[in-house]
Image 1 (cartoon, rainbow, N blue to C red):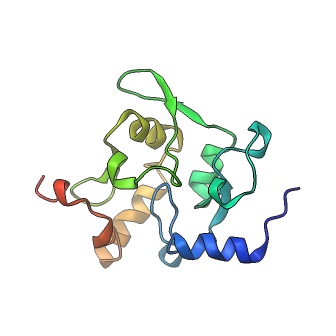
Image 2: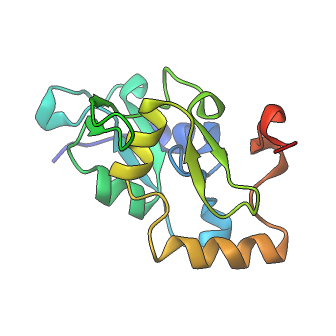
Length: 149
């Protein structure tokens, strides 16, 4: 078993503002502890260096598992999954107008949404409640260029 120091876990969680770095779910509103996830899994040669670790919710972490690539549903090409350490969320994803669905903007975004089932039948109803309560999506997460859509 790989051992990640508590200080490293805390640093990653704090830097991610206690939100899943894939689907942006907040630990506070989900009520579920986030996981430290290996972007490149150890079984695929990844390390436990901070540059290969991110904060992930249980859903994203369980669907990602050891995958590093996914299939873009539009082009059917295999592409790398989103890497929260080297890529920016708003360049690959945006929220639907009602704030409930994550939409992929790029092949990487679409493949990640599909592979990690970021709009699964369990999280979407929860997001609806979070939106109604005014907790989600966070205003700072909405890209300026999609606000007018």
